[in-house]
Image 1 (cartoon, chains in turn green, purple):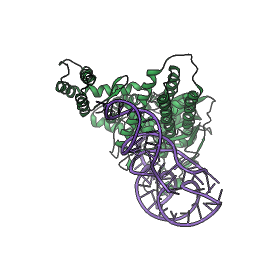
Image 2 (image 1 turned 90 degrees about the vertical axis):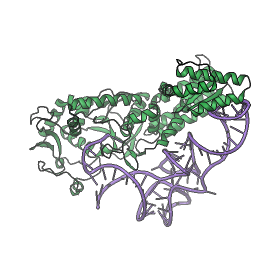
Image 3 (image 1 turned 180 degrees about the vertical axis):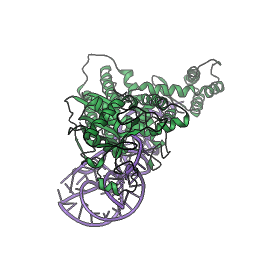
Length: 493
RNA sequence: GGCGGCAUAGCCAAGUGGUAAGGCAAGGGUCUGCAAAACCCUCAUACCCCGGUUCGAAUCCGGGUGCUGCCUCCA
């Protein structure tokens, strides 16, 4: 497959360190607040990458960290009067719930800073021994000027940055650009012993230490949001290669685009945040995921509620299509007709080629939609046989799995939870139309009774009444559809 | 101030030299008691503007305009 490499600034063939194996490290979250849709985008993008690589036959090892110790966590914990690691643990479990709802596969390894202190200390020791870092009054600092290639990832020169007015002034540093590898603890702060004094890691060193620990030098893909290019990933390269004695740190750098809200980047510090939890109250996780995947992963994504409506429509279409095939599929030894088989294999070929092209999801979705239309067209010309439906279902499901949109139960759950919220409305409708119900009926029981009432009306030619009932249900957000095989319903909040 | 990115229909969005994918919305039709779903048809002589290169440009080059990312914690 081809991927866009940030360092080389071009799209290149992905050649793994070891044939058939991909090692990837993705910068995770700092869990001091609920995850927002931007965090979700990054997680979903790399989850897609992992799924595609596995689908393409690679053995993938995916590592993603939690920065469970940092300035913000410490400050937040103080404000709330709790222990920092408890605060981060709470948000980590919340994050896990959110990611599960988005059908993000758990990474294979999820190291935490607080559990990686020894690796971090060892790495800092090597950097100091190699002459790239020094101990100062309030911590251990990396000497940016000693690392020639500093700036290679972000495309800036050390001199450009020096002239920038916004570089932090700190007299403990030898140079304003130097960054902390180890921060000495202030009284009462969480800290660990180190050869240089009690303290905690700087932000950047942790990712170097954890990725090298679990994947080794020269691992394949290092990813994250594009806002991490500078300084985080730039610093990672510098400190890692300073410790690695000439070995390469990472083979390919990938960066996912930001989610913009109201014209600027959504971020906790700006405060223009929509959390994953808020969205999940409105939309099934699969819809949120589909929304995030419709745009190329590298481009900025303008957050818009109408986009979720469109994604919902598309998701329903896919869910309905799958149900349609499932209803027809039958195990069979019949050979699928060549014309039909070519629709299926052509689809899978185009789908794979799209994702192999630097994860071109827009193109992949076009293949999915085209496939649905072709199969439906075929089905409208003549009945599909069981083996054809099975073949189409198999192809469709394999694509859905790669996209992470294989949780059809998610849609059904969403439907039934919306339905459950309509107890009172349904009771009112039932009473109004004279359906046979009692107070103990469940929502689905109520709906069944109303549908039965309407069915009788239709069968006896009382179409006015049938239409009236359908209209009443529509007014409470339930749309009935009469099909040849019975009545179906769609539901909206 | 420095270094980047983006600009395609009402909306979302592919396409990086060969004559504009796909989806949503909209309009028309088939089917249906009527709807809905499904299927069929229509929907950018045109890709922010102005120049240039080329047989040929949404795609390359130059200049504008607008939006935006990073340079500080960030996914």
